[in-house]
Image (cartoon, rainbow, N blue to C red; front, side, top):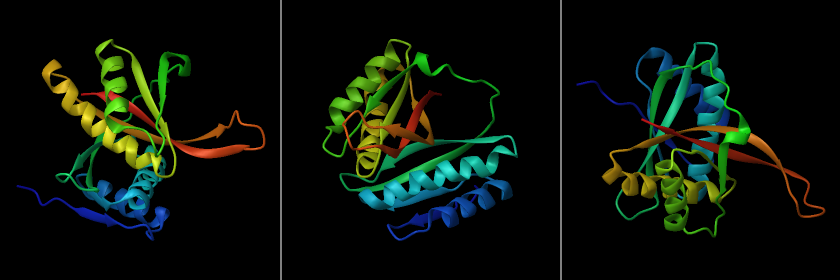
Amino acid sequence: SREERILKVSCKSNVKNVAGSISYVCRAGEAPILYATGYDPCNQAVKAVCVAGKYLQQDGVELRVVPVFQGNTASVHLRLHKVEAADVTMDPELIQNIIVLKTSSPFKSAGAIASRIRQGERVAVLANGHGVFRALEAIAVARGYLKDDAKDISFEPSMVNITSKIPGRGESTSVKIRMVLF
């Protein structure tokens, strides 16, 4: 059996350094597992996967992520999988965006994700800051909801700029987490 590489991510981890490590491990063999505990480390880990995805584009590789929580804790393993890059551009109008905030219920968000997947819709989650952790929770719960349907999901994260509809708020960078059936 192959030895799995685990990269630990903390709130102080440099996103570009973690992304470089992910890319290095991916180029040497199998994709690593990222281990993070808490809101900020999870946010850093997902941002690092976004950046690593950009680094690996030139190799024709995309990263897919499956979040696995360790019991009833804030510790999560982000299992990364390398897949051959698809030369497909998805029409943004065909993707149902679900906004997840730090105050969102992961169970309600998971229900929304699972419902749309069951209906055959394309789904993405938009989150930033502590909302990224809630999004990871929602995806993990949605995987459980979809088990009886013999469906499973992973995700591809990317960074997007979102303009707030609230006057004076301006633009912020969020993580867009696109669900992928496998």
